[in-house]
Length: 120
Image (cartoon, rainbow, N blue to C red; front, side):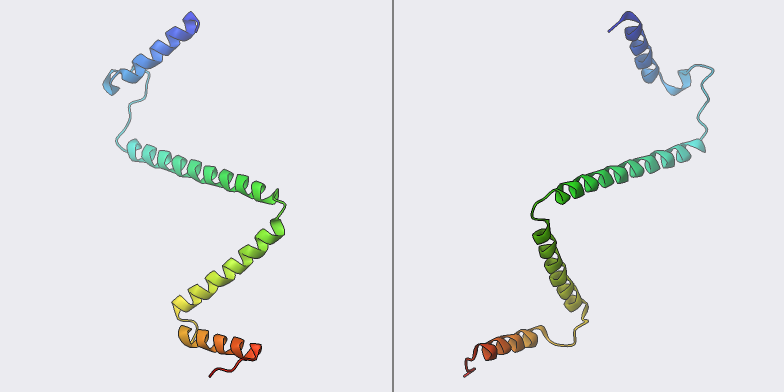
């Protein structure tokens, strides 16, 4: 580190450590109304940074998925999983009028009948 960089670093540290009322006269005093505005600005910047970071991570994951050799199977599995989730969600919401156990019993009886076994 050169002498000039060292002096600048020391000056920055001393300014950060100096209390607000001892700031140089050319520095604008912080008004009470500016504090909430500054806080909102910082919060908005933080939310935007978080959103962009999540977007970047999602794009990275999407690129990784697109490079996979088993993409067709992956998409097929995803569609099957989404369909099953949709069925569960619809049942939970009460969309289906049939009772779940009745539906399962009917499907089992249909499978048995299709195989040619008797239900007795």
